[in-house]
Amino acid sequence: MNGPALWKRYTTHLCLCPQIGLSLDISRMGFPGAFFDHMEPSMQRAFSAMGELEAGAPANGDERRMVGHYWLRNADLAPTDEIRDQITSVLDRIETFSRHIHSGTITSQNNELFDRMIVIGIGGSALGPQFVADALGTADDRMKAYFLDNTDPDGMDRLFAELGGNLGRTLAIVISKSGSTKETRNGMLEAQTAYRRAGLDFARHAVAVTGAGSELDKLAAAHGWIGRFPMWDWVGGRTSVTSAVGLLPAALQGLDVTALLAGAAACDAVTRQPETRRNPAALMALMWHYATTGRGEKDMVVLPYKDRLLLFSRYLQQLIMESLGKESDREGGIVNQGMTVYGNKGSTDQHAYVQQLREGVANFFVTFVEVLQDRQGASMEVEEGITSGDFLFGFFQGTRQALYEKGRESMTITVERIDAFTVGALIALFERAVGLYASLININAYHQPGVEAGKKAAGAVLALQKEIMGLLGREQAMTAEEIAGSLGRPEAVEQVFAILQHLAANPDRGVAVVREGNVSEWRFKAK
Image (cartoon, rainbow, N blue to C red; front, side, top):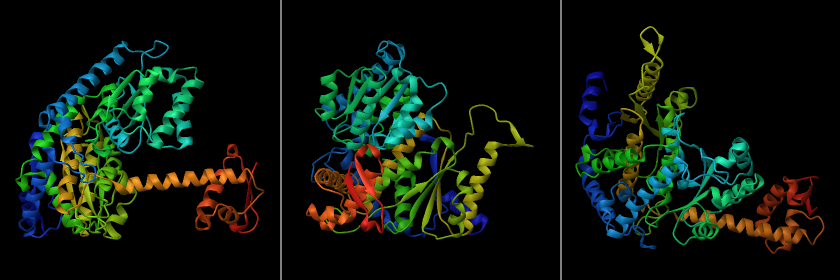
């Protein structure tokens, strides 16, 4: 397509949303002329389904749960007065608690101001808050945020070593809806130990964000933690960033949570309108359907041209892949749906994997995110008449054109600046696109049976490990095959070997190994 024809396609299909300072360009997606007319009935059904969801219709048939993350930024939309009052009450509590922390009304055990925080969570309890903290943080933040988002002992050691003598001024926020998520529980226990070693009472530095009556809620109440904030069963983890999960750390960091919520609410309003061509979330959902033939046949590469959006692709991986990666449709038919998401940032990627994007396997489409404002204030020239921001813009435009020349499809989200309002709008845009696309392909975006299956499988591994340790305490050195046989689990021999190898690599676990011959001949025993 030549320049004038491409310009006409651009002006025809550009979706301008001045209410949220955002536009969506889909002109570099190769959809045919009849595509929108063909998809319009399905799109209207998706709008209706979204309207029912927002009105409080149960989204999970097995659990009869509502999905209400949209109410979090406009409580007046909540289906009951009770839910509305819960939302507004928690917002007030977050504001009050943060003010008391910043002013010193609430201090650490040693009567010092809190100037750091550790957010202990995993998945949606970490990815959203982490993205917001990185996107909006400055050197003038009221509190510096750290994240303990895995059950990796070495990672925990690195974090506590970095905090060092500052642990006494560090607030710990433990986030888990059920209170029984193992990774979060482990992080909490490790944190308790770190505080105790420093001569500190963890409870006097700890806040819980959890479900009412959960194990964590009961623990925090019993030990007198300094704060407890709710998570509701109608807010899923991957859509919880505009709840206390994301708002409490953001407010403590000193970010403008009012603007964040306003941006999300404004985007919700824009993407609620049923005129498809003026609705950027609907257009995104349709482009996903076109690019992947509604079957996840291509990956989405997210390329934001802004350092502050580095973590955006990680956040979107969970939001999109956990929502859309489903084995069954709503009628129980096997469909194996999903869409893979990966990305980093521009122009870093031009020195990483753009080479393959341009000339390798054409199994993807790109979502660029362009930020018009380079920085606050004036920029120096790095060449005559050219700034560093001009180079970044040039690299974005050049990559977009280079991909188009090779038949690689892309769409571009353009925002004016990165601030709290814009970040809120971007979060809401993708949340709603996910919901609409799920309706188009007839799957439930709001449950995750695969995640639960993985948790159960992990529990079985740990149970097997306890059986192995009990056996090693009674027997002489044995091979993995002999141990599996003695446990009556010959089918699990490979897993038995993996467990033993892991234990033997950690001297404190009490397992010794003699590595002689093939791995099937290695012999293990208790030290």
